[in-house]
Length: 196
Length: 419
Image (cartoon, rainbow over all chains, first blue to last red; front, side, top):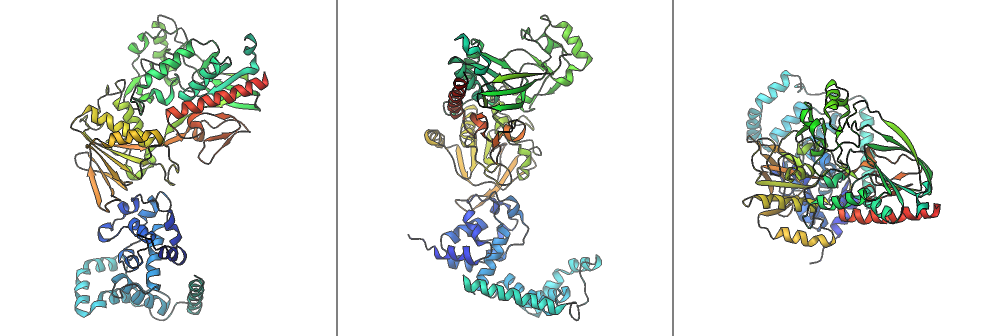
């Protein structure tokens, strides 16, 4: 069987931190360290080997890299100092730019549709609205049910002033500079993508 | 060869382990004068702490005894114990070295009768057995120790009891007021053979050594399996003395890891295979599991791996475990991902042995004290003096002996040029 190296090369060049995958020695410490491993179909180690084996569709369509909660256990323990958390986020982002991700993937939907719109609209995360949008993204019935399930946590957070119930109105100071930064970042990214 | 006694033809060997002993006897038996300096009270180094050598599984006592005889019978070898080289000046062919001789508090008149230890009431953690048991503050490391003179811990020497103990010595050999001294020597060559120490397993936090009683290290396991060791050779676990019949070995514990020792020590795979045979030989109903990234059985040692693989009660799991926890029964539970099947495991054992690697003494407490010396990024000696055995690179006993013999040759070259 011939390996298709084009996918591995694409990941090394186009996916943020992707070149680090070359350094993986397949020891399995990341997989054993991941607190959410039971919910992943493939561990980081397996994803990295799949990249090297040229399994383009399996990797990019995988839900795995959307499951990472950035706890950094894997980064701390990796014997070869691979920035695994960042590689995983890079793969998620790369899958998104390649339009390979299932649009209904919950983390992707939250990130692309809810979080991004929320923060870019005003320059600050509106916590109440963000939570509402997340809870109600599958319809009113599902939203109410989730809200009830999380009621105790929400009240606890309100009491300890960890959740601001009042929606943020207006825009942050220097909102123009903020949008310019975002535009510049998008421009740089487009340039990088064209180069690759 | 009376002229060979000229000061310029003396070869200084630093470290009295298997490498230093080899360089010393090889150079001396070729007709050169050797000054052997050892920081511990007795010669033999790490090898003396081993239960068996791989791959032949014979006792190191035998090899050491031959070397001790060769030293004892050779007037060209002068050895200093409890001594350290503090400064080296000059260059090849013409070194001046300063050596600190720490007090032993027991003179060479000691006959090793043991009367002093019998009355000594102070006990300390035994450094020879990595603190697994207690020993008297005046003692001998083991029955085969060379030189066989007893030694006294410096803190004990200061006590009133030490003065009383001195009085009962039939040979009058105990001197609690002995002091350190510094000497200077002229030598033609310096061979650095300071060897290695086991990497400090407490630094590997996810494995819980020091926190869980039944997580131990490979060097401690060597003492546990030795008939001269703290349990008389019975492989039992430290927490409750239960026979350790289900034992896990974790390879590369703190090795090949940028968080700890980045390099491979080259011996730990074979050492664990050897130690697996200790368990299997002692308990026929035992089970051994070896966790590994990849097994490194260099050249001819491949056959030893094949032999251990034939034992169905030794299993091999390709995985670097992520962490160890302890269950309610005090069993260490090894957790990780089997990289061949992708399955996650959490397996309890009676005892877990961490195959820790070699940290060169020259990286920690025996840097070469010379302006001209160089060390690599891990602390192994690369230049300025000659380096033998594990002071030069991590390696096994057989290769250390080869390296030490080669360094005897190089040292002789330096001495001949000078002579």
